[in-house]
Amino acid sequence: MNKSHLFGAVVAVVVGSLVPALVSANIFDINSMSITSGTFELRDPSGVPVINTDNGLGISPFTVIGGNTNLVGGYIGNGGTGTDTIASLSFSGAIANMYTAASNLGDSNSPAGTIAGGSVPFGSLDDVGNTINIDLGSWFMNWNSNDIHTGTGKTDGVTSAFAAGAWDPVTGAFTLSWQSLTDSGPKAGFTALIELSGIASPVPLPAAVWLFGSGLIGLLGVTRRKKAA
View 1 (cartoon, helix red, strand yellow):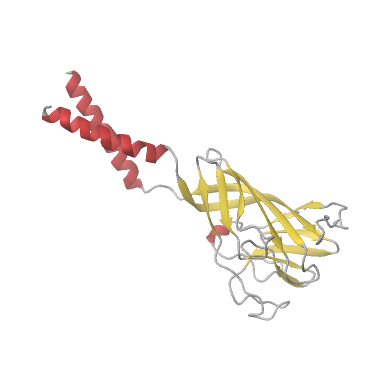
View 2 (tube, helix red, strand yellow; view 1 turned 30 degrees about the vertical axis):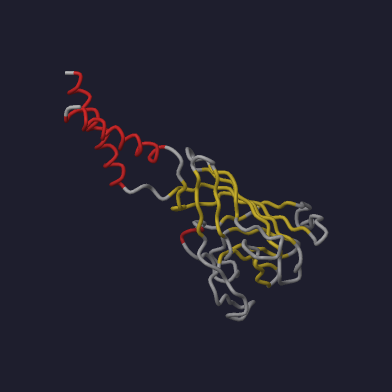
């Protein structure tokens, strides 16, 4: 085998191993996301949906979507007072605001430090399985002057480990849901079910990886042209 054939063979092997990594199975961190709609449902301890007396529904759509819904961008909200809410709706006579919070949560309704928050939401996107998964351990709801943890990851046998759902890698559209056993407030022991829809984008591969891959492919093309000549 001469040098050009050897070089071509090496490039072919490297490119053959690199291209699938560039265009095939990948799980990416979520780079950014936005929420466009969602629903809220509450079930009593026996599993029966609680009717929202404000609209007569068991499953209520969010009527307000906040201006900043990039969950993976950091904490959103200020303890449930209504400013910077992720989403909200009127539920049986009181506004229910959804937000995320760090540790030492506190506002006019809950003295600082009385409720533990959680980590900044983080998650992943699978462009082969077309799925989305997010840790929403810091998700809360403020309703009827109570801050209620309605996030993921609680070890109570009911709460979902993660918010999970479907993601379209072409359009970025996602739908995810989870359930959370409430552990405080007038509805303690009830189960909240929340669904969100929107657009999510992955952390892009470093430009150097794409340049390296395209460079190798170019070298392979040059080698093949020399062989043909």
